[in-house]
Image (cartoon, rainbow, N blue to C red):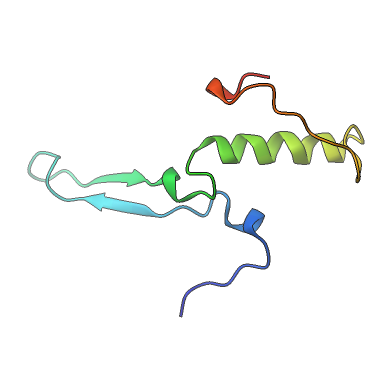
Amino acid sequence: MARRYGSILETIGHTPVVRINKLGPEGVHLYVKLESFNPMGSVKDRLALGVIEDAERRGELKPGQTIVEATSGNTGI
């Protein structure tokens, strides 16, 4: 049975590691982490969640406040 999550946030970072069978030389086991399986399709999901959770822990971000994303390019803040 597939794993069930209580929130889309719980899926961030739980991306699969998959073996690539035909790229590595003989005897090499090559694996990749599929960050594209994150909700927004990027490793940046991990960074964004970390920044938000850190701001909440430090009291800089409180319920009801608005987050404005200045840019999507290279997670520029």
